[in-house]
Image (cartoon, rainbow, N blue to C red; front, side):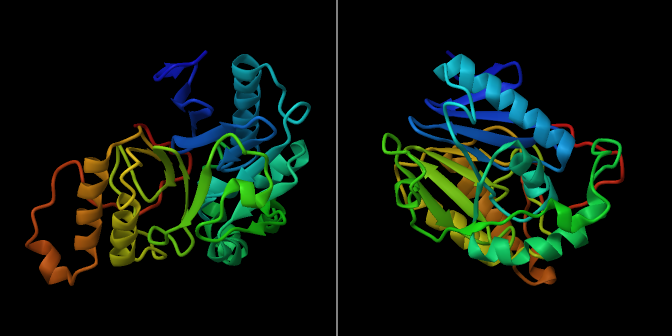
Length: 276
């Protein structure tokens, strides 16, 4: 069985939850293994990355539970937000047999526009099989709202209490999954690189929602969309820095930003991959 740490690119976050980092941009996808169903969080940037995520998690399911994805365990997908590296793999997952895709209402509302606006941000050398029409990346989605549990959704997690939190900030529709002491936070938390504040980010709301997440004292591990899991202190520090970004520029200039918690704007040149 996997323990904490890395095994062939896969890490055990906690019992039943595994992470896999893959390029482009070192995305962390997550596999949650339930008794009756598996859930995969974030599907990558297109067919190649999505296929690698699927193949890897299929092996993890077999080695860790003795059950085959799609055969012994139906698979659902959760998208944390509507950025290309997190949902452009959905159509590949649908072709593999996934029929349930969940996201926040705001995320679903923005996905079609995001597919067109962000299409050319995908490194073509790493995703050569992207369709010519970005709308082919879209699949039917099901809305989930703040406070809904996996049990409410009927996805077969009676043995593991997983709660949805909708906490916008990095985008208009960020979604977090809380499972016991672990929160899968998407890009609301960034480790190994500065938080990315794009045009769809609202820094003050972002900081406030990180603080809301910290109100649950049981959550002690925060597993991000990029980088390694972090603790409560790290999240509190990042919330402070992001909150500062919501001030007027003149105020921000005078603030002492720590070296490891500065801010970034998104965007990589074609063919570039993020190295952590």
